[in-house]
Image 1 (cartoon, rainbow, N blue to C red):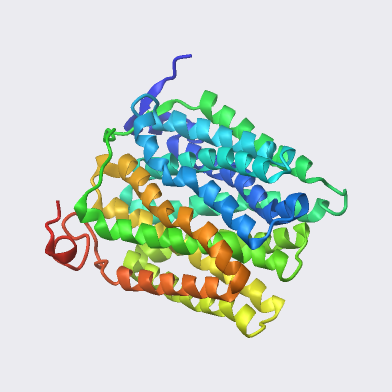
Image 2: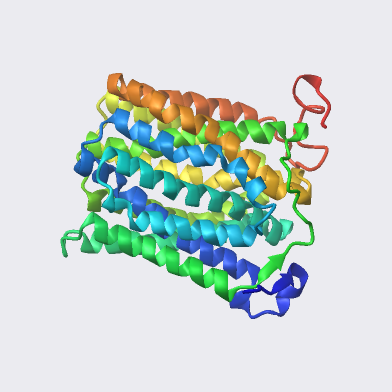
Length: 412
């Protein structure tokens, strides 16, 4: 079947629901239904199915992050497949893997299906970030990305509400919930593939790896972001189940509160990036995360209550909502043709720590869980210092407040 190719400039003549921005919104709502459902049930599922410990959950997340580390392979795939096509295929793979998750209750089976799910998730995210930066006008990007984030939160809220309201009432099984969530994502991916034309950006994307020295600060911030995000993703939710005994509906209710907060605040966060700039908003994010992670450690060292841990979990997610400022920072300093290859390189850099830290810190967790969170606080502090190098008005030639690259190196 030959797909219609429509230039972005001509897409304005299409009905609103068939435009490129509408496609971004639709995919943004389909992806988290699978991923968020998988995440909400994961800690309870692995403990129920195979009695996972902190060490085991570390191994699982290390395996899950391998495709993210290899996201640079997207560049090779894009030599043969259009970005938009790859996005819908990867989205479908995520849905299929989510639907089959509960069919593999052993350690080996869980790792295998997690790897397949992760390939779909990370390849979709890599390409989707590139499409967002190509299809959304720079002047509207912060606000529009905020609305896209709010739409994703809205779809996830619907999934979480259904789990909270029906899990105990109808005595649902892990298999049923995973099948429904994954099946929904697959159906949306099929719809996106067949019902939308192929949109063509005015700036052809390079099909080779792009690693520019003048982007060095962006790369370092991606490395730090991957490290601190992974510590939170792996161990914060696991703590709520292992230490405080949260059940599936309780964990999902906590996730639901997070999503309601993000849905309400995401447009405001986009507005904040637009008004105050990337530097100020990222400083606010990392400063807040430092405090949150220090207090997470206090849950173990000073015996903070479950309510303190739950509030920290919500606040943590709110601060993470500002992370899309890194996308707009790249959009401002980068060449238009660099978006796709740079997104792939950034994903790989982001996942260097994500591959190493979970399994390593899984062993630390067995000795001192609080120390894991204090390490995350240190990473947030380093990120705070790096953000201070971002200019108030970044752009080509003004990537940092320093002249050229690190240690006096030239920009290119």
